Every structure is written in C-alpha cells, then in structure tokens.
Image 1 (cartoon, rainbow, N blue to C red):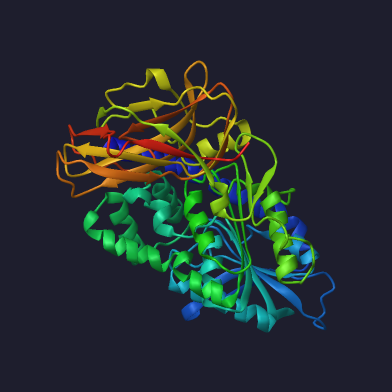
Image 2: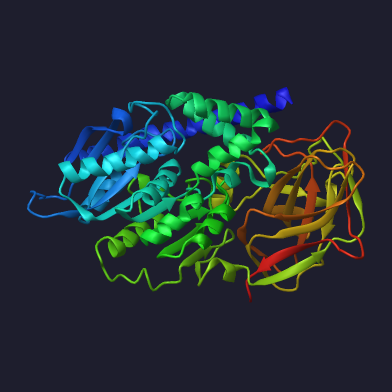
Length: 522
C-alpha cells in the first residue's frame, strides 16, 4: 500500500506540474494584449480584511456616464489571477465590466485555502461590493463564472448572494462528496492532485489540512466530519436558494472529468427549477475550456458569453429556446439536444449476468479507469480511452460477462447501472465495475465505470448491490459487444480489501443480476 500511494503521489505531482506550467503560460499569453486595453491590477479587501489580488477590465471608452453588466471570475485551484485575461478582454469588448480575482490562500492573495467554504463565499460578495463601488458596473446585472474551483465558488456565491443573476460553472461540481467519494470510495488520484497543487501554490488552512489528511488515510472514524464538511461546500445543498432567486445556471463539464465526474453535476441540474442549461463534451477536467483561456475559439466560452448576453444584457439570441441539455459523444458527431437529463436515458437495454463468479482481491486485474488528466485527454483528442484485452483478463481477479454481438450501433447515453448480488468473505471490501466496448479481436475500450466500497457486512451473507456508473456518451459500433468487468483494485481509488478476501457475484433466480445500459433511440 505504501508503494502504491507513493506512485499516486508521483502521478499527481506530474499532472500538477503540467497544470502549473500551463497556468504560467496562460498568464503570459493574454496579458500583453489586455495590458493596453483598460486592465487594472488592484487589491480588494475580502472577508475579514484578507487581501485578494485582482484585475479589472472595462469596456473601451467607459467614462463613468453609463453602467455595464458585471462578470466576476474567481480563479481555478492553483492558478494565478491572470488566468482569465483573454476571456476577460473578449467580454469587455462585448460590453462587460470583468473582474477576476485570485481566491484566498493561493499565490499572492492572503489568507488560507478554505476549499470553497464560508470565507470564499463571503469573499465573492466583497468582490462584488468593490466592483460596484469602483467600476461602472450595473448592480442589476451581475454574473459569475469560473473553471473548476472558480466554478464551484461561483455557484456557492450565487446561492448566498441574490445579486448574482447568472452563473456559468465550467468543469465545476454540484456535490463535492459525490465527486471525490462516490460509492463511499476515496478518489485517491484526484485528491492527490488537488493536495499537491494546493501545497505547491497556496497555504492550506488547519481545517482543510485535517480533513484532506483523514480522507487520504482512509480514516473511517472521520467519515461523518468529511460528509458535513463537503455538504457545506456543495452547491446542491443550496439549490433551493438558487431556485428562489431564479438564478440562471449554466453547467458545462466533460465526460471523462477525473476530478468532478459528470453524474453528480447532472443530479444537481435536475434539482434546479430556474433557467438552466447542461452541457457535456469529450475530455477530462477543464480540458474542454483550456483553449479558450488562450483566447482561441472555444465552444464552452462561446456558450458562456451567449448565456450572459441573454440573462444579463437581455439579448434575444435564442439560448433560452434551445434544448437545455446538450451532449457530444466521445466517439464523434455533433451536439445532441434533450429536453431534460431524464430524457437522455429514457430507453435502456439489459445485459444478463448469468451464473456466479468469485474474484480474489488485492491484485489489479488489468482493467482500470485510467489516469487522472492523461486518460481523458487521450480520449478527447485521439479517441484513445483506457483499454483492456478482455479475453486475457485473469478470471481469478476479474469477473467478466459479455453481451452478444450487436447488429446495429448502440448509442450509450447516460449512466449504466449494475444490479447484482455480492457475498463477501470479509466485513469490508472495494470493487470497481467497468463497461467496455469489445471489438472483434477482444480489445476492450472503456465506456464507463464506477467504484463501490462497503463496511460492516456479515462475512458469508449475501447483499444486493445497485451501482450507478459515472455517465458517458459513447457509440458502440455494429459487430461489437459490451462487456461488464468487475475487479477490486484500481489506481484511481483507495481499496478497502482485507488481505486474502474474496467476493462472489451471483444471480439468484428470484433476483437476477444484470447491467442496465442507457441507449439513445436509433
């Protein structure tokens, strides 16, 4: 386990180093353009007087005789305050006052990292106050947007400050715990990436350090504290406030997001009753937005500007009449529109999981969910998801079921669900379920997956399991099969399998096992 964790830290450090280098380049690239176009670098007193480093870009020719809609952009985790300068300039050119600020605890801003807690929420309101007092911003037309950490803070700030009328959450989260602890399983690589970036570019608070340390150690005695901590930092907790205010909410994410998986954002979207829009595209965490940070053409940022144009400026650009759920398949094709998230998975097919299979734990079978950032990027740009040779997977450590060959294309849309019966030999255990697209030569391409951990079970006593996967959009070609693989070790997640434990998966006649696959009608 020690070697396993060291390997994860190495992977995390590499990923974070790459992101920090990108952050530095992002800061340099747009700054030269923006510097001659009304950008000011300012200090803002946040909650408790904490200094927040910020920059303001105003429309050309703004002379104080008129007011402009305001867009506030909190920075991403580990990124400097110049992150959004290219997009800030575009929005300013379109008639917005744009204020971007470095969130507390990172880079030159003061204070300690609050992980989107009460201090971060209060900071956002202080930033709005400052903008209304020191720029030609219109108090009646205020929006917030951000990528990743900035996305979560934007949603939380809007829920607590009704002055914020519209939000664009890009690669953000709805439920923080369901993001990093889905299936009661620690998302170990994701946590390592966040922790390494936070340590390298910021200053952790004692509270965040204690919570994240307990999370990474797998200390179950702290589980209730973790859930309470995460609930306070989850926009879904405050959906009723957003609904009462009628805040217009755009949620955009990626199918392969290894930090904030898509399903929890879709569940949050379903809670909202005001103007809303949900977009999912191929990619990993924040990779769909990154070209826009360089000022290059980008669908996510284009839709963000259209969202603000309609809900802050009142432009009749049709964004409110388009299908509110827009999805793009990982395997190609254009955008698909749906009236709501439930309609995405309205049709389902079943794959029967007949017989019984026993797997031994503690060994990686070769079926894996990939690597944080790397796998999603390869899938996005090269159509190369994680793969496994399905016929060669060792049945001692992996249970495998396959469908018949499909005569037509199977358009998987949404979250597949595993229903089975599990009999453990120990009271605790972890399993990971994978859905693969299997070609004629037996090579499986990962379609979807999800982890699950249990505690307090009676050894030898069966229990039922319904496990919802993380969600995807993927087209399985005609002549291929779908395969369900279950094993017990994945580098993405922490495992809780005692040495020598075994798990048996069965399909009783009274309660047959199956995988329910969400399909788009042909």
